[in-house]
Length: 490
Image 1 (cartoon, rainbow, N blue to C red):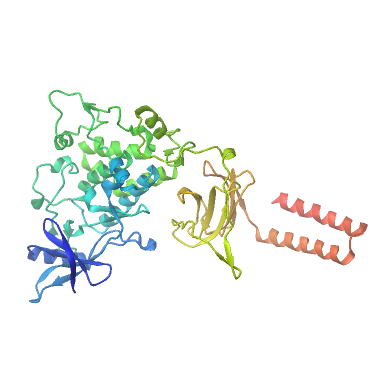
Image 2: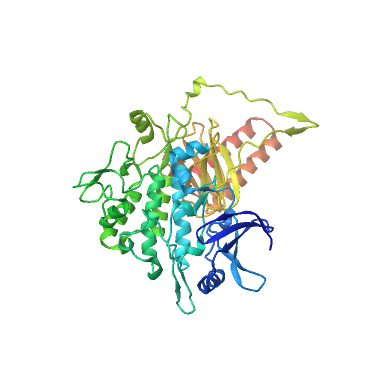
């Protein structure tokens, strides 16, 4: 193993590029026997990668130990997370603007959902993260997060139940029961991670705002954030000593299930930490929330929850003069004409540019269909779902679920308001595109289908054999009426 370039220096180690493509080396300043034992457990018991099917690395997990010339363990080898931005760059509007990142509210909610799913996988494997903070979470342009600094996790050896603690914590993300405690002497549980996860999700959904910031109406000066956390004083606490200000993004704009998760964590969970939502609870609530998002009719960068009923971001930008999701104002379709240049042809081979690569299905795509106005693309997949895409931006608009087998065909109605889908589960479903609800389910019947096909083929045979005369016309009309009767009798 050869170390390359200049290392990135952290509190307890240096991180180097290596001659192994896609791998980094973390070398400790002062290696201890505890480090060695902890790494051995982590390498032997790696959590399941929840995003393996997406070819994504969800956590920079130790792969193997690194030894010096004397055979002493000095660190470990891990996969490199490429092209990821720190979480604060994603949720902070000013940093997004400076970095020219195209991020909307749907992207942020999807990122929150994916963080919760990764932490759920880590908890299922018996690990506690301990030090959850924005600096330890990187996000790529597909809203897929990766957690780094995993060797700081709290690790339990399943063979002898020995616990290797997480010795560090971050202010503003520490649960009230652990504030001012010595982390090196505390065995933490995933209940403590639940608080930290809720704060991270709140920042993602509310423009980087913290649940513990607002107008203090209690006596004396505004307490420090850790003191507010210790006393359970957040924006929607029962005592209401901390109140929203004009720029505060209100809780009611998000899906009701997500609202309930925040109230459970910071109100019920303050009294009884076991009542805080698990990472799995957040996954369920956020999945509902993402599926309920719809795009604004005025700005292509504004998404809002259908349960809220209107675009909060338009109202906020009008009121405050600041739009944290700036984009293009939509023009009326009748006023815009798009000029599409002809592709250049050489030797009968078309030379053109790749316009979009749409990713999101977890299995093969069997069928696609454009809406009549060309603005939406529907795709049916063997993952049993239908996805609707914004053609121009390449964004996923909706995910339609209801089939129990692969979706083999999709088609829009002429007005674009209804989508039909055919599936291996022997049903045809009709969907109201805007509400993503199924209108009708039609069960296919193989015997009736075979009968209809036989009759239709017989009619075609008669027509060909006898020609276009009165007798053939009579027979054809009779067969046509018979086919209609069979169809409507199903």
